[in-house]
Image (cartoon, rainbow, N blue to C red; front, side, top):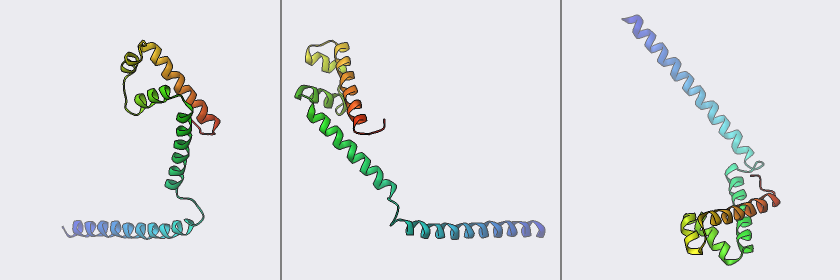
Length: 119
């Protein structure tokens, strides 16, 4: 019984020691990383910057479209209207509308690639 109690106490002590030691290493790492904050941009900030650039490119692309195409694109990809619904309102078949949407997507992809956005 005392052997088991001793073994349990020893294992708990070792576990606690490892946990404290790991916490110290982590705290030291935090200090090191905070020192680098001045030199290295925050990854979230970089992601937000990239999103803002892509958003501006898409807005310019949308502005370059004629009004009807812009409305169709926004209704399809923002409001999630179906191709069938859009086609019926435009007096087209669903296949014709699908081809039109494909052309718009291709145009957007080419614009993004031309601006240097990796897809």
